[in-house]
Length: 469
Ligand code: LLP
Image (cartoon, rainbow, N blue to C red; front, side, top):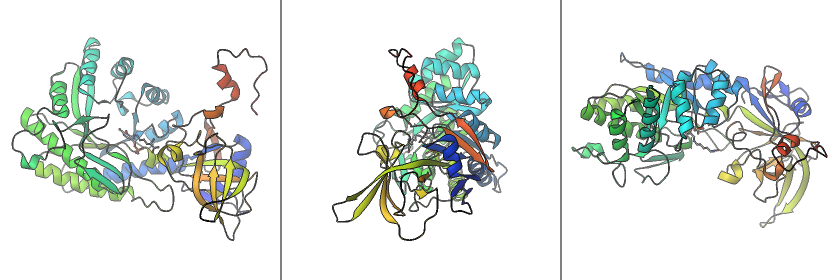
Protein backbone atom coordinates (compact mmCIF):
# COMPACT_ATOMS: atom_id res chain seq x y z
CA UNK A 1 0.00 0.00 0.00
CA UNK A 2 0.95 3.64 -0.49
CA UNK A 3 0.88 4.18 3.29
CA UNK A 4 3.56 1.63 4.08
CA UNK A 5 6.62 2.96 5.88
CA UNK A 6 9.42 2.05 8.28
CA UNK A 7 9.20 3.18 11.90
CA UNK A 8 12.16 4.84 13.65
CA UNK A 9 13.39 1.44 14.84
CA UNK A 10 13.17 -0.07 11.37
CA UNK A 11 9.90 -1.91 11.64
CA UNK A 12 7.38 -2.01 8.81
CA UNK A 13 4.19 -0.08 9.43
CA UNK A 14 1.06 -0.20 7.31
CA UNK A 15 -1.49 2.57 7.54
CA UNK A 16 0.45 3.91 10.50
CA UNK A 17 0.25 0.67 12.51
CA UNK A 18 3.43 -1.32 13.24
CA UNK A 19 3.57 -4.87 11.90
CA UNK A 20 4.51 -6.29 15.32
CA UNK A 21 1.52 -4.59 16.91
CA UNK A 22 -0.80 -6.04 14.28
CA UNK A 23 0.74 -9.50 14.67
CA UNK A 24 0.52 -9.35 18.44
CA UNK A 25 -3.08 -8.14 18.51
CA UNK A 26 -4.55 -10.31 15.78
CA UNK A 27 -2.04 -13.15 15.33
CA UNK A 28 -0.57 -14.38 12.08
CA UNK A 29 -1.16 -15.16 9.30
CA UNK A 30 -2.98 -11.89 8.98
CA UNK A 31 -4.46 -10.12 5.98
CA UNK A 32 -3.93 -6.38 6.38
CA UNK A 33 -5.80 -4.00 4.11
CA UNK A 34 -5.07 -0.30 3.87
CA UNK A 35 -8.39 1.50 3.70
CA UNK A 36 -6.59 4.66 2.59
CA UNK A 37 -4.95 2.86 -0.31
CA UNK A 38 -8.15 1.07 -1.34
CA UNK A 39 -10.11 4.31 -1.39
CA UNK A 40 -7.36 6.17 -3.26
CA UNK A 41 -7.29 3.54 -6.01
CA UNK A 42 -11.08 3.45 -6.27
CA UNK A 43 -11.10 7.21 -6.66
CA UNK A 44 -8.22 7.14 -9.10
CA UNK A 45 -10.06 4.74 -11.41
CA UNK A 46 -13.28 6.67 -11.29
CA UNK A 47 -11.61 10.02 -11.88
CA UNK A 48 -9.21 8.81 -14.55
CA UNK A 49 -11.86 7.04 -16.63
CA UNK A 50 -14.51 9.71 -16.15
CA UNK A 51 -12.08 12.43 -17.18
CA UNK A 52 -10.92 10.53 -20.25
CA UNK A 53 -14.42 9.87 -21.48
CA UNK A 54 -15.79 13.28 -20.57
CA UNK A 55 -12.94 15.51 -21.72
CA UNK A 56 -13.70 15.79 -25.37
CA UNK A 57 -14.83 18.60 -27.59
CA UNK A 58 -18.03 16.68 -28.13
CA UNK A 59 -21.16 17.61 -26.29
CA UNK A 60 -21.65 14.05 -25.11
CA UNK A 61 -19.31 13.51 -22.21
CA UNK A 62 -20.93 10.53 -20.58
CA UNK A 63 -18.38 9.76 -17.89
CA UNK A 64 -17.82 6.20 -16.79
CA UNK A 65 -19.50 3.91 -14.26
CA UNK A 66 -16.93 1.94 -12.32
CA UNK A 67 -18.17 -1.33 -10.82
CA UNK A 68 -15.85 -2.71 -8.15
CA UNK A 69 -15.51 -6.45 -8.86
CA UNK A 70 -16.28 -7.98 -5.49
CA UNK A 71 -14.87 -11.37 -6.40
CA UNK A 72 -11.39 -9.94 -5.76
CA UNK A 73 -12.31 -9.20 -2.13
CA UNK A 74 -15.64 -8.40 -0.60
CA UNK A 75 -16.79 -7.47 2.88
CA UNK A 76 -19.49 -5.07 3.96
CA UNK A 77 -16.89 -2.44 4.86
CA UNK A 78 -15.07 -2.78 1.55
CA UNK A 79 -18.36 -2.49 -0.35
CA UNK A 80 -19.17 0.70 1.57
CA UNK A 81 -15.71 2.17 0.91
CA UNK A 82 -16.19 1.53 -2.80
CA UNK A 83 -19.67 3.07 -2.77
CA UNK A 84 -18.48 6.09 -0.80
CA UNK A 85 -15.83 6.65 -3.48
CA UNK A 86 -18.52 6.69 -6.13
CA UNK A 87 -18.20 3.11 -7.36
CA UNK A 88 -20.94 0.59 -8.03
CA UNK A 89 -20.57 -3.07 -7.05
CA UNK A 90 -20.21 -6.01 -9.40
CA UNK A 91 -21.23 -9.36 -7.92
CA UNK A 92 -20.79 -12.83 -9.36
CA UNK A 93 -23.10 -14.91 -7.16
CA UNK A 94 -25.98 -14.74 -4.71
CA UNK A 95 -23.41 -14.78 -1.89
CA UNK A 96 -21.56 -11.72 -3.15
CA UNK A 97 -24.90 -10.05 -3.79
CA UNK A 98 -25.93 -10.76 -0.18
CA UNK A 99 -22.77 -9.04 1.12
CA UNK A 100 -23.33 -5.98 -1.07
CA UNK A 101 -26.93 -5.75 0.16
CA UNK A 102 -25.87 -6.25 3.77
CA UNK A 103 -23.54 -3.30 3.26
CA UNK A 104 -26.57 -1.21 2.36
CA UNK A 105 -25.60 -0.73 -1.28
CA UNK A 106 -28.49 0.56 -3.38
CA UNK A 107 -29.60 -2.37 -5.62
CA UNK A 108 -29.69 0.04 -8.55
CA UNK A 109 -25.90 0.29 -8.16
CA UNK A 110 -25.28 -3.47 -8.21
CA UNK A 111 -24.64 -5.77 -11.17
CA UNK A 112 -24.98 -9.56 -11.19
CA UNK A 113 -22.74 -11.83 -13.25
CA UNK A 114 -22.52 -15.58 -13.59
CA UNK A 115 -22.44 -18.15 -16.38
CA UNK A 116 -24.84 -20.43 -14.50
CA UNK A 117 -27.12 -18.29 -12.37
CA UNK A 118 -29.70 -20.20 -10.38
CA UNK A 119 -33.41 -19.38 -10.65
CA UNK A 120 -33.19 -18.16 -7.05
CA UNK A 121 -30.37 -15.75 -7.96
CA UNK A 122 -32.29 -14.41 -10.95
CA UNK A 123 -35.49 -14.07 -8.91
CA UNK A 124 -33.63 -12.16 -6.20
CA UNK A 125 -32.01 -9.85 -8.74
CA UNK A 126 -35.35 -9.13 -10.40
CA UNK A 127 -37.27 -8.54 -7.19
CA UNK A 128 -34.54 -6.18 -5.94
CA UNK A 129 -34.52 -4.31 -9.24
CA UNK A 130 -30.74 -4.69 -9.64
CA UNK A 131 -29.09 -2.10 -11.82
CA UNK A 132 -28.15 -4.79 -14.29
CA UNK A 133 -28.06 -8.51 -14.84
CA UNK A 134 -25.31 -9.54 -17.22
CA UNK A 135 -26.78 -12.45 -19.17
CA UNK A 136 -24.32 -15.09 -20.32
CA UNK A 137 -26.43 -17.32 -22.60
CA UNK A 138 -29.53 -17.34 -24.78
CA UNK A 139 -31.08 -19.77 -22.35
CA UNK A 140 -30.54 -17.33 -19.48
CA UNK A 141 -32.45 -14.60 -21.35
CA UNK A 142 -35.43 -16.94 -21.58
CA UNK A 143 -35.18 -17.72 -17.87
CA UNK A 144 -34.94 -14.04 -16.90
CA UNK A 145 -37.95 -13.36 -19.10
CA UNK A 146 -40.07 -16.11 -17.55
CA UNK A 147 -39.14 -15.12 -14.01
CA UNK A 148 -39.50 -11.36 -14.50
CA UNK A 149 -42.79 -11.50 -16.39
CA UNK A 150 -44.28 -13.86 -13.78
CA UNK A 151 -43.40 -11.20 -11.21
CA UNK A 152 -44.74 -8.40 -13.38
CA UNK A 153 -41.27 -6.86 -13.45
CA UNK A 154 -38.75 -5.81 -16.07
CA UNK A 155 -35.10 -6.79 -15.67
CA UNK A 156 -32.33 -4.53 -16.95
CA UNK A 157 -30.00 -6.72 -18.96
CA UNK A 158 -26.58 -6.54 -20.58
CA UNK A 159 -25.27 -9.36 -22.77
CA UNK A 160 -21.82 -10.75 -22.10
CA UNK A 161 -20.13 -11.22 -25.46
CA UNK A 162 -16.84 -12.82 -26.41
CA UNK A 163 -15.25 -10.47 -28.96
CA UNK A 164 -12.43 -12.85 -29.86
CA UNK A 165 -9.81 -10.96 -27.89
CA UNK A 166 -8.01 -12.61 -25.00
CA UNK A 167 -5.52 -10.56 -23.08
CA UNK A 168 -3.04 -11.27 -20.34
CA UNK A 169 -0.28 -8.93 -19.17
CA UNK A 170 1.62 -7.78 -22.26
CA UNK A 171 -0.04 -9.97 -24.80
CA UNK A 172 -3.38 -10.33 -26.39
CA UNK A 173 -4.67 -12.77 -28.93
CA UNK A 174 -7.18 -11.41 -31.41
CA UNK A 175 -9.72 -13.39 -33.47
CA UNK A 176 -9.20 -16.40 -31.26
CA UNK A 177 -11.74 -19.20 -31.33
CA UNK A 178 -14.14 -18.99 -28.45
CA UNK A 179 -13.56 -22.33 -26.81
CA UNK A 180 -14.50 -21.39 -23.26
CA UNK A 181 -17.55 -21.27 -21.04
CA UNK A 182 -18.22 -17.53 -20.77
CA UNK A 183 -20.29 -15.28 -22.94
CA UNK A 184 -21.83 -15.29 -26.38
CA UNK A 185 -19.69 -15.52 -29.47
CA UNK A 186 -20.02 -12.88 -32.19
CA UNK A 187 -19.35 -15.48 -34.78
CA UNK A 188 -21.64 -18.10 -36.35
CA UNK A 189 -18.55 -20.32 -36.57
CA UNK A 190 -14.79 -19.83 -36.34
CA UNK A 191 -13.11 -16.52 -35.60
CA UNK A 192 -14.95 -13.27 -34.95
CA UNK A 193 -16.11 -11.77 -38.26
CA UNK A 194 -14.67 -8.62 -39.72
CA UNK A 195 -17.58 -6.31 -40.45
CA UNK A 196 -15.54 -4.00 -42.66
CA UNK A 197 -15.26 -6.65 -45.34
CA UNK A 198 -18.72 -8.08 -45.11
CA UNK A 199 -21.74 -6.12 -46.32
CA UNK A 200 -24.32 -8.73 -45.33
CA UNK A 201 -24.87 -9.17 -41.60
CA UNK A 202 -21.86 -11.31 -40.64
CA UNK A 203 -23.31 -11.98 -37.20
CA UNK A 204 -26.43 -13.77 -38.42
CA UNK A 205 -26.65 -17.13 -36.72
CA UNK A 206 -24.09 -16.26 -34.07
CA UNK A 207 -24.97 -16.83 -30.41
CA UNK A 208 -24.58 -13.08 -29.80
CA UNK A 209 -27.00 -12.11 -32.58
CA UNK A 210 -29.52 -14.74 -31.51
CA UNK A 211 -29.27 -13.41 -27.95
CA UNK A 212 -29.97 -9.85 -29.11
CA UNK A 213 -33.00 -11.01 -31.12
CA UNK A 214 -34.40 -12.89 -28.15
CA UNK A 215 -33.60 -10.16 -25.64
CA UNK A 216 -35.26 -7.45 -27.74
CA UNK A 217 -38.38 -9.57 -28.10
CA UNK A 218 -38.52 -11.04 -24.58
CA UNK A 219 -41.20 -9.88 -22.21
CA UNK A 220 -39.82 -8.63 -18.89
CA UNK A 221 -36.37 -7.97 -20.36
CA UNK A 222 -34.97 -4.57 -21.17
CA UNK A 223 -31.78 -4.96 -23.13
CA UNK A 224 -29.61 -1.90 -22.45
CA UNK A 225 -26.14 -2.86 -23.56
CA UNK A 226 -23.22 -5.17 -24.14
CA UNK A 227 -20.42 -6.43 -21.95
CA UNK A 228 -17.08 -8.18 -22.37
CA UNK A 229 -14.22 -9.15 -20.07
CA UNK A 230 -11.09 -10.08 -21.97
CA UNK A 231 -8.77 -11.35 -19.27
CA UNK A 232 -6.69 -10.65 -16.19
CA UNK A 233 -3.57 -8.78 -15.20
CA UNK A 234 -3.53 -6.72 -18.41
CA UNK A 235 -0.86 -4.02 -18.69
CA UNK A 236 -1.41 -2.54 -22.14
CA UNK A 237 -4.52 -0.83 -23.55
CA UNK A 238 -4.54 -2.51 -27.00
CA UNK A 239 -6.58 -5.54 -25.99
CA UNK A 240 -9.28 -3.34 -24.43
CA UNK A 241 -9.28 -1.10 -27.52
CA UNK A 242 -9.70 -3.97 -29.91
CA UNK A 243 -12.48 -5.54 -27.84
CA UNK A 244 -14.27 -2.19 -27.64
CA UNK A 245 -14.04 -1.83 -31.41
CA UNK A 246 -15.60 -5.29 -31.98
CA UNK A 247 -18.46 -4.47 -29.62
CA UNK A 248 -19.03 -1.05 -31.14
CA UNK A 249 -19.24 -2.57 -34.62
CA UNK A 250 -21.80 -4.99 -33.24
CA UNK A 251 -23.76 -2.15 -31.59
CA UNK A 252 -23.84 -0.32 -34.90
CA UNK A 253 -25.19 -3.40 -36.65
CA UNK A 254 -27.94 -3.76 -34.04
CA UNK A 255 -28.84 -0.11 -34.59
CA UNK A 256 -28.97 -0.44 -38.37
CA UNK A 257 -31.00 -3.67 -38.34
CA UNK A 258 -33.39 -2.97 -35.47
CA UNK A 259 -33.22 0.80 -35.16
CA UNK A 260 -32.42 0.27 -31.49
CA UNK A 261 -29.51 2.16 -29.95
CA UNK A 262 -28.19 0.18 -27.00
CA UNK A 263 -26.67 2.76 -24.71
CA UNK A 264 -24.29 0.83 -22.44
CA UNK A 265 -20.92 -0.72 -23.10
CA UNK A 266 -19.08 -2.49 -20.28
CA UNK A 267 -15.46 -3.33 -20.97
CA UNK A 268 -14.90 -5.52 -17.90
CA UNK A 269 -11.96 -5.61 -15.52
CA UNK A 270 -8.51 -7.13 -15.76
CA UNK A 271 -6.31 -4.09 -15.18
CA UNK A 272 -2.87 -5.30 -14.09
CA UNK A 273 -0.96 -4.58 -10.88
CA UNK A 274 2.66 -4.94 -9.73
CA UNK A 275 3.18 -8.17 -7.81
CA UNK A 276 6.95 -7.84 -8.03
CA UNK A 277 9.33 -5.17 -9.27
CA UNK A 278 9.31 -6.82 -12.68
CA UNK A 279 5.70 -5.74 -13.19
CA UNK A 280 5.25 -2.21 -14.53
CA UNK A 281 1.56 -1.50 -14.95
CA UNK A 282 0.49 1.78 -16.52
CA UNK A 283 -1.32 4.45 -14.62
CA UNK A 284 -5.12 4.08 -15.00
CA UNK A 285 -5.18 7.53 -16.65
CA UNK A 286 -2.96 6.25 -19.47
CA UNK A 287 -5.15 3.22 -20.11
CA UNK A 288 -8.26 5.39 -19.90
CA UNK A 289 -6.93 8.00 -22.33
CA UNK A 290 -5.90 5.42 -24.92
CA UNK A 291 -9.18 3.59 -24.58
CA UNK A 292 -11.29 6.74 -24.77
CA UNK A 293 -9.54 7.80 -27.97
CA UNK A 294 -10.06 4.37 -29.51
CA UNK A 295 -13.71 4.21 -28.46
CA UNK A 296 -14.41 7.65 -29.94
CA UNK A 297 -12.68 6.77 -33.19
CA UNK A 298 -14.55 3.53 -33.43
CA UNK A 299 -17.95 5.12 -32.71
CA UNK A 300 -17.27 7.74 -35.37
CA UNK A 301 -16.21 5.10 -37.86
CA UNK A 302 -19.31 3.00 -37.28
CA UNK A 303 -21.58 6.02 -37.12
CA UNK A 304 -23.02 5.60 -33.63
CA UNK A 305 -23.08 7.85 -30.59
CA UNK A 306 -20.74 7.35 -27.68
CA UNK A 307 -22.33 4.75 -25.36
CA UNK A 308 -22.25 4.99 -21.58
CA UNK A 309 -19.01 3.19 -20.72
CA UNK A 310 -18.53 1.06 -17.63
CA UNK A 311 -15.61 -1.00 -16.32
CA UNK A 312 -15.25 -3.65 -13.61
CA UNK A 313 -11.85 -3.47 -11.94
CA UNK A 314 -11.25 -5.70 -8.93
CA UNK A 315 -7.59 -6.62 -8.56
CA UNK A 316 -6.33 -3.14 -9.46
CA UNK A 317 -8.29 -1.58 -6.60
CA UNK A 318 -7.86 -4.03 -3.75
CA UNK A 319 -4.74 -5.99 -4.75
CA UNK A 320 -2.05 -3.41 -3.93
CA UNK A 321 -3.97 -2.31 -0.82
CA UNK A 322 -3.35 -5.66 0.88
CA UNK A 323 -0.36 -7.16 2.69
CA UNK A 324 -0.20 -10.55 4.39
CA UNK A 325 1.84 -10.88 7.57
CA UNK A 326 3.32 -14.25 8.48
CA UNK A 327 5.52 -15.42 11.35
CA UNK A 328 8.68 -17.25 10.42
CA UNK A 329 9.14 -20.81 11.69
CA UNK A 330 11.51 -23.49 10.50
CA UNK A 331 14.30 -22.59 8.08
CA UNK A 332 16.32 -25.06 6.02
CA UNK A 333 19.24 -24.57 3.69
CA UNK A 334 18.86 -26.74 0.63
CA UNK A 335 21.59 -27.13 -1.94
CA UNK A 336 19.86 -26.98 -5.29
CA UNK A 337 20.94 -28.57 -8.58
CA UNK A 338 23.11 -25.77 -9.81
CA UNK A 339 25.23 -25.80 -6.66
CA UNK A 340 23.67 -22.77 -5.06
CA UNK A 341 22.01 -22.85 -1.71
CA UNK A 342 18.46 -21.79 -1.28
CA UNK A 343 17.10 -21.03 2.14
CA UNK A 344 13.61 -22.40 2.71
CA UNK A 345 11.80 -20.24 5.21
CA UNK A 346 8.55 -21.77 6.40
CA UNK A 347 5.76 -19.51 7.60
CA UNK A 348 2.56 -20.17 9.52
CA UNK A 349 0.21 -19.96 6.52
CA UNK A 350 0.60 -20.80 2.85
CA UNK A 351 -1.60 -22.08 0.05
CA UNK A 352 -4.68 -21.97 2.29
CA UNK A 353 -4.53 -18.19 2.59
CA UNK A 354 -2.89 -17.59 -0.80
CA UNK A 355 -3.42 -20.32 -3.40
CA UNK A 356 -2.36 -18.09 -6.31
CA UNK A 357 1.24 -19.36 -6.58
CA UNK A 358 0.09 -22.96 -6.74
CA UNK A 359 -2.92 -22.20 -8.98
CA UNK A 360 -1.40 -19.75 -11.42
CA UNK A 361 2.33 -19.89 -10.84
CA UNK A 362 1.93 -16.37 -9.48
CA UNK A 363 5.00 -14.49 -8.29
CA UNK A 364 5.10 -12.41 -5.13
CA UNK A 365 7.80 -10.60 -3.20
CA UNK A 366 8.39 -10.35 0.54
CA UNK A 367 10.15 -8.14 3.04
CA UNK A 368 11.27 -8.60 6.60
CA UNK A 369 8.72 -6.59 8.55
CA UNK A 370 9.78 -7.01 12.18
CA UNK A 371 13.13 -5.24 11.78
CA UNK A 372 15.50 -3.75 9.21
CA UNK A 373 18.73 -5.52 8.43
CA UNK A 374 21.16 -4.13 5.90
CA UNK A 375 23.96 -6.05 4.21
CA UNK A 376 23.98 -9.01 1.87
CA UNK A 377 20.74 -10.81 1.39
CA UNK A 378 20.53 -14.46 0.44
CA UNK A 379 18.33 -16.37 -1.98
CA UNK A 380 15.32 -17.57 -0.07
CA UNK A 381 12.04 -19.27 -0.76
CA UNK A 382 9.06 -18.69 1.48
CA UNK A 383 6.95 -21.79 1.89
CA UNK A 384 3.82 -22.55 3.84
CA UNK A 385 2.96 -25.25 6.36
CA UNK A 386 0.58 -27.30 4.21
CA UNK A 387 1.29 -30.88 3.19
CA UNK A 388 2.23 -30.13 -0.41
CA UNK A 389 5.56 -29.35 -1.97
CA UNK A 390 3.82 -26.82 -4.23
CA UNK A 391 2.85 -24.86 -1.13
CA UNK A 392 5.05 -21.89 -1.96
CA UNK A 393 4.28 -18.31 -0.97
CA UNK A 394 7.22 -16.55 -2.63
CA UNK A 395 9.31 -18.57 -5.03
CA UNK A 396 12.47 -16.49 -5.05
CA UNK A 397 13.30 -13.60 -2.79
CA UNK A 398 16.50 -12.20 -1.28
CA UNK A 399 16.24 -11.86 2.50
CA UNK A 400 18.77 -11.17 5.27
CA UNK A 401 20.46 -14.36 6.46
CA UNK A 402 19.57 -13.44 10.04
CA UNK A 403 15.83 -13.96 9.43
CA UNK A 404 14.88 -16.49 12.08
CA UNK A 405 12.03 -18.05 14.01
CA UNK A 406 9.64 -15.41 15.28
CA UNK A 407 10.41 -12.77 12.66
CA UNK A 408 7.50 -11.29 10.79
CA UNK A 409 7.48 -11.34 7.01
CA UNK A 410 5.20 -9.20 4.88
CA UNK A 411 4.01 -10.27 1.44
CA UNK A 412 2.61 -7.27 -0.48
CA UNK A 413 -0.06 -7.17 -3.19
CA UNK A 414 -2.17 -9.84 -1.53
CA UNK A 415 -5.39 -7.83 -1.29
CA UNK A 416 -7.04 -9.45 -4.31
CA UNK A 417 -7.96 -13.12 -4.80
CA UNK A 418 -6.24 -14.27 -1.60
CA UNK A 419 -8.92 -14.05 1.06
CA UNK A 420 -11.58 -14.67 -1.57
CA UNK A 421 -9.84 -17.83 -2.81
CA UNK A 422 -8.75 -19.04 0.64
CA UNK A 423 -9.47 -22.56 1.88
CA UNK A 424 -9.29 -24.72 5.01
CA UNK A 425 -6.90 -27.21 3.48
CA UNK A 426 -5.26 -29.31 6.23
CA UNK A 427 -7.85 -27.74 8.52
CA UNK A 428 -5.88 -24.60 8.94
CA UNK A 429 -8.17 -21.81 10.04
CA UNK A 430 -8.68 -18.91 7.66
CA UNK A 431 -6.96 -15.73 8.92
CA UNK A 432 -8.76 -12.53 9.85
CA UNK A 433 -8.80 -9.46 7.64
CA UNK A 434 -7.87 -6.23 9.40
CA UNK A 435 -8.16 -2.77 7.91
CA UNK A 436 -5.65 -0.08 8.83
CA UNK A 437 -5.92 3.63 8.30
CA UNK A 438 -4.21 6.64 9.87
CA UNK A 439 -2.75 4.68 12.76
CA UNK A 440 -5.89 2.74 13.64
CA UNK A 441 -6.82 -0.89 12.98
CA UNK A 442 -10.25 -2.46 12.64
CA UNK A 443 -11.26 -6.08 12.06
CA UNK A 444 -13.19 -6.48 8.78
CA UNK A 445 -13.55 -10.25 8.89
CA UNK A 446 -12.90 -12.33 12.00
CA UNK A 447 -10.42 -15.17 11.83
CA UNK A 448 -11.86 -18.65 11.84
CA UNK A 449 -11.52 -20.88 14.89
CA UNK A 450 -11.08 -24.64 15.20
CA UNK A 451 -14.38 -24.67 17.10
CA UNK A 452 -16.15 -23.13 14.12
CA UNK A 453 -14.70 -25.77 11.82
CA UNK A 454 -15.69 -28.55 14.22
CA UNK A 455 -19.19 -27.16 14.58
CA UNK A 456 -19.86 -28.22 10.99
CA UNK A 457 -18.82 -31.80 11.73
CA UNK A 458 -22.00 -33.71 12.59
CA UNK A 459 -20.06 -36.33 14.55
CA UNK A 460 -18.62 -33.75 16.90
CA UNK A 461 -20.20 -34.23 20.32
CA UNK A 462 -18.81 -31.11 21.90
CA UNK A 463 -16.68 -33.07 24.36
CA UNK A 464 -12.98 -32.36 24.45
CA UNK A 465 -13.53 -28.76 23.52
CA UNK A 466 -11.31 -27.75 20.68
CA UNK A 467 -9.02 -25.06 21.87
CA UNK A 468 -7.17 -23.50 19.02
CA UNK A 469 -3.55 -24.62 19.15
N1 LLP B 1 -15.52 -8.63 -14.52
C1 LLP B 1 -15.67 -9.91 -14.88
C2 LLP B 1 -16.79 -10.31 -15.71
C3 LLP B 1 -14.72 -10.86 -14.44
O1 LLP B 1 -14.87 -12.13 -14.80
C4 LLP B 1 -13.64 -10.45 -13.63
C5 LLP B 1 -12.67 -11.41 -13.15
C6 LLP B 1 -13.55 -9.09 -13.28
C7 LLP B 1 -14.50 -8.21 -13.76
C8 LLP B 1 -12.47 -8.54 -12.40
O2 LLP B 1 -11.19 -8.74 -12.94
P1 LLP B 1 -9.91 -8.06 -12.23
O3 LLP B 1 -9.99 -6.58 -12.48
O4 LLP B 1 -9.96 -8.39 -10.78
O5 LLP B 1 -8.75 -8.72 -12.90
N2 LLP B 1 -8.61 -15.74 -9.50
C9 LLP B 1 -7.83 -15.14 -10.57
C10 LLP B 1 -8.58 -14.03 -11.25
C11 LLP B 1 -9.92 -14.47 -11.79
C12 LLP B 1 -10.63 -13.32 -12.44
C13 LLP B 1 -11.99 -13.73 -12.86
N3 LLP B 1 -12.77 -12.66 -13.38
C14 LLP B 1 -6.54 -14.60 -9.99
O6 LLP B 1 -6.34 -14.71 -8.79
O7 LLP B 1 -5.68 -14.12 -10.72
